Amino acid sequence: MTNELRIDEFIFKEFLLYILYTSEINGGEIEVNGEIIYLNVMDRLTLEGEGDVWETDLKRGVPSISREAKRAILNGKMPSLMKLKIQSGEDSFFFVIDSKTLDIKSLKIPVVAIKEPDIKLEQRMFYIETIYLILESIFKDFCSIRTDEDKWEMFVNDVKKWAKEL
Image (cartoon, rainbow, N blue to C red):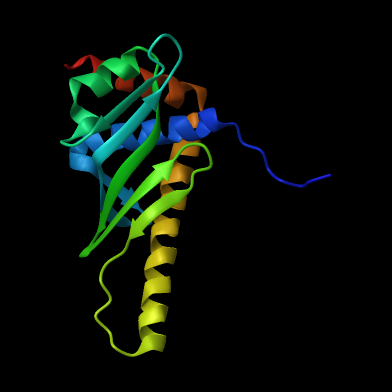
C-alpha cells in the first residue's frame, strides 16, 4: 500500500489556466510573499481537450494571447504544457511546466558569476529553491480561489470574458 497523495491532473490544468490568465492581466504582475513578480507565457503552449482535435500546440510568438489559444479555451481545452518566464526583481527564470505531474523541465536560472565552486553551488541551489517557493505561493493563491465557490465562479467568468476578446 502506498501513501502517495493523488491529485487528479485536471486540478493542475486549472492551475496552468490560472497562470495563463494571470500572465495576461495587469501585465502579468502578481504579488508573491509581499514582492511583485511578473509572469509571462513564452513561446510554447499546449492545450488539451476532447473531440476531433483534442490537442492544440502553439509555438513561436506569444501563444497566450493568440486567437487560437483563446478559441481553444472557449472550446473547453485546458493548458497542459507551457513555457514560462518569471521575473523576480533582477532575476529571470525560464522553464516548462507540465500539468501531468506539475514537473518543471528545462529550468534556466540566472547566471551565477562566482568562481568559487562551493559558493556557486550554494547560489544555484538558492535560485532553484526560489523558483519552487514562488510556484508554491502562486499555487496557494490558486487554491484559495479554487476552494471558494464564489471566487471560482467569478474567476471562470473572468476567463471566459477574456477569452472572448479576440
